[in-house]
Length: 239
Image 1 (cartoon, helix red, strand yellow):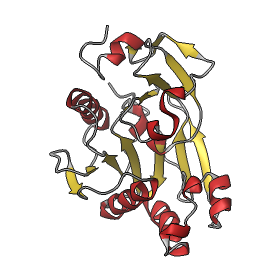
Image 2 (image 1 turned 90 degrees about the horizontal axis):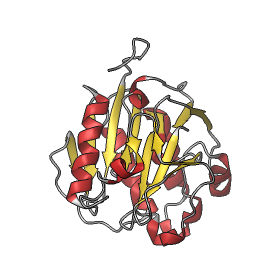
Image 3 (image 1 turned 90 degrees about the vertical axis):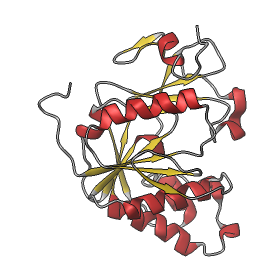
Image 4 (image 1 turned 30 degrees about the vertical axis):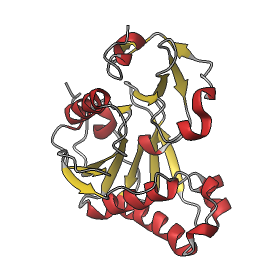
């Protein structure tokens, strides 16, 4: 149940997927997301048609960070609200993520209360504090402005340094790209987000199973329960 101090934000939830994760996992993530957002407007961005909110199907395009931002830009332009929240297809969200905090109009906000879990090892949560798209709540017009500036600066995408095509408001990325450095902030919710690291994730192409586990670890966390319980959302045969 939502606390009395929760706000009713003017925010659209934008869920995006490459349609490569297993259906058991995908269905569990989407069910939890619907529960968390309540009656907020929902846009889904996918490579295959998807009956989930207002669907925008881009078709079978190459998986790349440039196409991720192209797709998110389409979703941001389709939204009608002042704010947008990006949701990835392998992340669990508590309801307060969408109803607790909105940044100023000139600032990107990242939820810093986040745990990760690896699908390939004994279930253990570990704490991560890096700002990522999956935790972003953004003023819609600010996001559109920031991403359009990047594409305008590099009309020849072969010249775009993709290693710096990162989250808006992370000034080291923006400085390297030669674009406007915009404000960002972190915020915290009492209940955390949970991000799954798994072989079908885009980041797995880079790090694989070498991805390190953080030093702060837990077998059980608030709201979600034990790591073993959460892992069952990813695979039916999890013990």
